[in-house]
Every structure is written in structure tokens, then in C-alpha cells.
Image 1 (cartoon, rainbow, N blue to C red):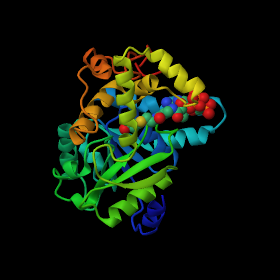
Image 2: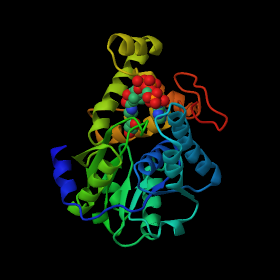
Image 3: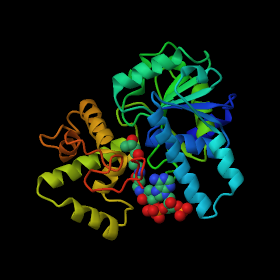
Length: 303
Ligand code: 3HC
């Protein structure tokens, strides 16, 4: 946090217009967060259905706040106006800061980042909201790796204060400073960390999930584990519910990256219950089926 504060002081860049690539639960949450704190943000995806879902994610949060009297009609309208949906890279030409939040797949992320770099100005900062993939590895797809770093938000974005900012070996100090400053403007608590698979948080979280999977393979009942962790141990969500919130698909991809990165510390399990759910297309809260069954709204998002 100390490093982050120092870095932000050095920032000469003020983000006037941001962009988020991918209008999923994370993309929608990031768009809401930026817009609600006064920085306009272009939200780009590849089809209108995805865009509509991203907008509905932001609207849902705003409607709840309006109904509870936490915001007024003016704040509601200005936040929505600050989110500019688009299907085209043309809308990114005036963007000074990009957050890539597409699927957790190294090849897809690398391709989207490279494509984006060709469509923004030479000093635009590019960041990736990857959960686990090495920033140095993603930077290989870029011509300007000095303008690139990780910016890792947590789900649900509006409620989780932390943002990990990951410095790659070629990331410039200015890129880190601007990212720290923008994260702070979004109302988040940035920490600057070095690059490695899983960065800081997921190096803690995924071994915990792996321990949970081992317990299940030993015959434990996931509902009982959650009950103990929540009611008796006092954590807000037990591991099964948290995996559903993170997304079983995301968690499965992250587990692979962590096991590849730390093969002796986090070996792949023969029968990982998370992989079994994933193979059965049970992605957790995002499609209503995971360890638990979740209620979805009429657009197919968690109610
Ligand atoms: N989006 C927006 N707002 C939400 C929300 C969501 N998904 N869920 C709840 N809220 C709002 C509620 O409407 C309520 O608003 P109000 O204060 O205006 O009434 C407020 O948040 C509190 O709601 P709850 O009483 O239901 O909230 P809880 O006290 O249960 O806290 C929580 C919710 C903060 C999400 C808590 O359950 C928690 O901390 N869970 C753990 C989450 C976590 O660990 N996330 C990180 C996952 S790892 C990750 O994302 C990284 C990846 O790389 C794997």
C-alpha cells in the first residue's frame, strides 16, 4: 500500500476516458465502478447480447441503490451516461486507459490485447484483469510492453476494496503510477505486486480451494464445509459458495495456470470436483448451476 501511495504521487496522467473490454460480470462491475466515480468508460464486447448483459449488471446495482435511497436520480443518470457501450474499436481512439476483462484464456487475452494496441494511441495504458496469467507472458503479444500492467479486481467489483496492480518486467513507473491513481479514483485500495502466476491474492486463495477439493475427494459434504466456514469460522462465504461466485469456469482455468506455474506446490488433482462441474457446464452463479443452484433474473444474470 505504501508503494502504491508513492507511485500514485508520481502520476502525470489523468484518465479522462477509460475502456473495458468484455461486458461480463467483471466487465459490467468495472464499468459501473469507473462510471459511478466520475470517469467515463467505453464498454466493448463482440456482440450486442453481451453488451446488454454488461449494461444490465450496472443498471441492477444502480436500481438497488436508488430503491434504498443511497443515490439520487441525478447520480443514477450520470453513472449510466458515463458508460458508453460499443461493438467497435473505433470508439477507443480517444481512450487513455484500457482494462481487458475477457475470458481467462491466455491466447484469447493475448489476441485481444494485441488487437487493442493497434487501435489506440501510442501512449494509451493497457491493463489486464487476469486472475492468474503472468503479465510478462501476456506482454509478449505487445509492441509497447512498457505501457502494460495487470489490474486485478475482485468479484463483486463494487463491494471488494482491493485491486492488485501487477508490474511486469518491462512496465514503466509511469504506467504503474497512472494505474494506481485511477484505481484510487475508482474508490479502490490498490496494492502493487510483482508478476508470477496468481500474483498475491490467488496464491493464497487457490491453495485454499485446492485444500477444499481434497476434502471433498476424501468424502466431505460441501454444504457442511460451507456452514462451518461461514457460521462458526465467520467468513462471509464458504469455499463452495465462493467458487460459485468466482465462476467455476474461471476457477478451473485459474487452477490450471497455478498448477502449471507451481507444479510441485499445487499439483493437478486427479479428480478435481471443480473440473467435474466445469465439464458439466456448471459455471456457478453466472449460469445458475454450480455447487449450488442460483436464481437468475430474466436476462440470465444472478438475481
Ligand atoms: N454486486 C453489487 N452489490 C451487491 C452484490 C453484487 N454482486 N451483492 C450484494 N451487494 C450489495 C447488497 O445489495 C447490499 O447493498 P446495501 O448495502 O445497499 O443494502 C450490500 O452489497 C451488502 O449485501 P449483503 O448483506 O448481501 O452483503 P454481505 O454482508 O453478505 O457481503 C460480500 C457481501 C462483500 C460479497 C461478502 O459476502 C464477501 O466478502 N464475500 C466474499 C467475496 C470474495 O471473496 N470475493 C473475491 C473472490 S476472488 C476473485 O474475484 C478473484 C478471481 O481472480 C478469482
